[in-house]
Image (cartoon, rainbow, N blue to C red):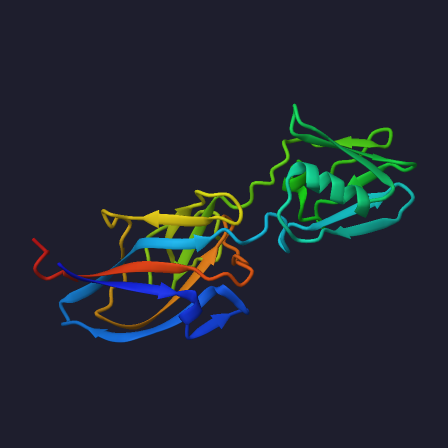
Length: 250
């Protein structure tokens, strides 16, 4: 089986979608094969910066409904937080609350100065950060409310990669029925570089085509949402294999 390694770098993309360099369009020298061939694609290697924030535009809103029929929506500044820096920041943002963190249980305690309150799950996006289930809106008891699950500031555990060619791979969390090329484990800490090698060229997708002159790639989080790499560039090596399906029918 003949093959070709294609190395793609985001800073040399021909076009970006949504102003993010995590969604790139690349034009390639045309590959044309005989009609009995099909092109298989697998991720051979990758170098991706861990430059997105664990508090970002997907999870930085908290809507609080108060017992006096008023409400406030708090929008958190994006950035990389740990529990200590997040509690410190929230204490300056939510000035009528006293906020503490229990390291032993990995939970937060929110206490209001004078009113009972409800964290509204419909209009809030930060429940996972603060340690609350997203399925209901928790209400304080005697002005205080404690996380009902552990706080989770880990962010996405994988970089999920989509392309414009069909695939039998499945990402259950993605409900948009897009073409899922593969998943790369986040194996470093924020500001580091995620590295990936696939020496055995596993997880091939069959494009069912015999010619190719472009490829679109999108890097997404665990929920299938585009990653905001904050302008830092990435590279990906794709192995294109030319499969003779006529000679391999027996």
